[in-house]
Each structure stands twice: as structure tokens, then as C-alpha cells.
Image (cartoon, rainbow, N blue to C red; front, side):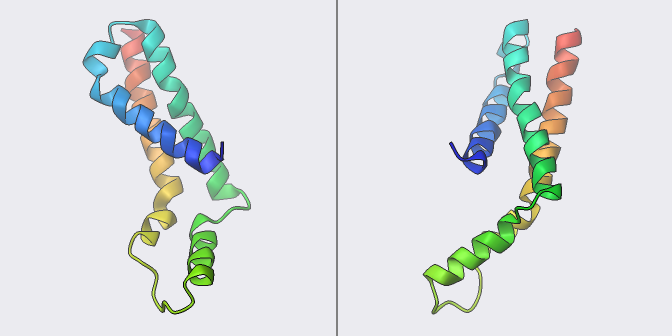
Length: 104
């Protein structure tokens, strides 16, 4: 599985875990399992910031190579500029929430 796809899956898992927090906080095992995607999101977000991959540049190059008639990028590509920061923010916030529930 591609790390980018896996990060999207982790975002969905964190969103589901946060949505069912009232049920998850009852079990320590579920809280530990919920923190694993948060840790991955933070690590992958840091890798995207400091690593050799630039998602916006790669995505825009692929878009213009496949659609040579287009002059402008679609608005969705703006998300790729901030994707690594979104990953880190979501991972840190929900990792903190889940760890606080673990301590209780």
C-alpha cells in the first residue's frame, strides 16, 4: 500500500475513532489501537515536510502531463500544499485526546 493512501486511511480511522470516542474511552485496548494511526500521521507528516517528496509539485506535474490543454490547476490541489501540516495537526490533537483518555 502506498504511504499516501495509508495516510488517508489513517485519517479516516482517526475520524471514526473520534466520532465514537464515547464508546472507545471505555476500553484501554481500543484507545491504544486508536493512537496508532495518530502516531503514523505525525511521523508521515514530518517525513513529508523534511523528506524528498513534494506532493503539490508532483501532483501538479502529473496533472499537466495528463491534461496539456489546461492552463490552471483545480482548486483541490491547494490542499496538497497543506496536507503534511494537516496530517501533523490531526495526529497531534487526536493523539493527545486519546492519551488523555488513557490516563483516566
